[in-house]
Amino acid sequence: MVFRSEFPDVPVIDLPIHDAVLAAAAGYGDRPALIDGLTGEQVSYARLAAAVERVAAALAEAGVRKGDVVALFSPNTVVYPMAYYGATRAGATVTTVSSLCTPGELAGQLADSAARWLITVSPFLPTARAAAEQLAGAGRPLTEIIVLDGAEGHRSLADLLATTGPAPEPAITPGEDVAVLPYSSGTTGLPKGVMLTHRSIATNLAQTDALYRPSVGERVLAVLPFFHIYGLTALLNQPLRCGATVVVLPRFDLEQFCRTIEQHRVQGLVVAPPIVLALAKHPVVESFDLSSVEYLLCAAAPLDQALADACARRLGLPHLLQGYGMTELSPVTHVVSPTEADPAPGSVGRMIASTELRVAALDGTADDLGPGEQGELLIRGPQVMKGYFGRPSETAAMVDAEGWLHTGDIGYVDERGYLYVVDRVKELIKYKGYQVAPAELEAVLLGHPQIADAAVIGVRDADGTECPKAFVVRTPGSGLTAEEVTGYVAGQVAPYKKVRAVEFVDAVPKSAAGKILRRELRAREAAHTGGAS
Image 1 (tube, rainbow, N blue to C red):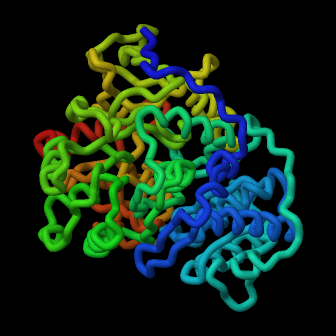
Image 2 (cartoon, rainbow, N blue to C red):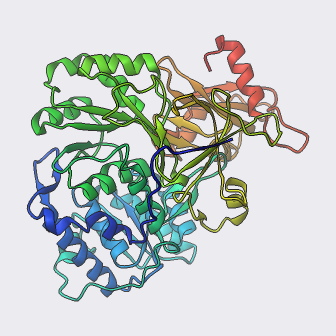
Image 3 (cartoon, rainbow, N blue to C red):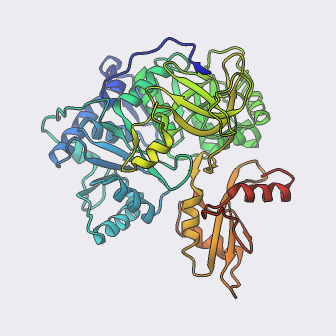
């Protein structure tokens, strides 16, 4: 059967994302759109809207045209949306880049996305320059690196805002033109650019309104990274569209996080499970007045129900909220509303408007399952991605001919329409909400001269966090140690991708076709740990 949303369908939003989000900005005027949680600096809606126009004008003067790709490589700041919406206002596609990436990873994304401009901040400039050198060496030089907070030899945000030329008027086609190109590993494999059109992300905001829509003036704390589609949607697009105030922190530090809630009387928290763990267990939380918090929404990775209950008790909330989605879905499909008095415990919520769900049998048959039956979750709706950039075959493997996106997640729907996600078909590792592709780490490992073969799976640590574990086959005569393996990988990948455990094996199990049989490694791990992997 096909499960359909209980909420009325919404029309598709055929607006550029900057217009969909900031259309009402002039009406909000001097109301604060963003507050720097560290310095207290405020950016009004009027200032934000004016800055977006000036940035768009400056980028157009620099040669940015419709369809060009601009990379945004920055931590959360109050000027991040000026760069983001300014670039889309100029007609560009923005590829958002992880703050934690290495020069090699940055160069890879810039090359894959065909980005010609890079917008960053001075602390990230060494990484940006190293990546640019790699691209230049490969004959693909960047046109310009813009440093928002200023650096010698580079234009700054102040320079962009001083532009006096007219803002461009690109002829954006919302249903076709790509607004943002975040990178996701999908269900397996290496990171791929996910083409999200202006229509898909703008419509997804409207789809979510029935269940989650911040009120005008509501203060929402933004510590999840804006470069991730979850943070970009839940902490920029939706709050700014609704007239809320986004209190911005560049990274998560528990004491600063709690202090910011207390000082700014934050009402809404949108987080990932590691923050829930810290709020539930760390003694420093008791030192702060967090009574302003009215709800906490957690997504990006599975959340243990006992942990959720402990956190809710500590914050004085009736329950925590959860949501579900993925980058390829712009990203939301399900959420628990802050207004619900009796949500199903442990569920990720009800389906948002204009969305359909099938639960496909896992036995290889074409059967669709009903309430209470577990299978792979298939989603269809206007929020489904346009596809993977430059990868039509991988797009076809993810989205079938009828428009159903195969999520790779296993779950079921209860009689009330609440969705439970219980496992994953896909091999992607979710480390503290970050996506880690086993294939990417395996490629790094195989670059070591003393490693003959390797496989990576996710295992649970003592806190229940899924971490990458490597199964390594040494070359004959090698005395390679686990510490040398972890150190080698750590030197080449972002911190969240590091291998956290190593086991040396005689051989990596593979199918007749040569595919790594990770399920056998998971079974092996479960046998060693009593099922805790």
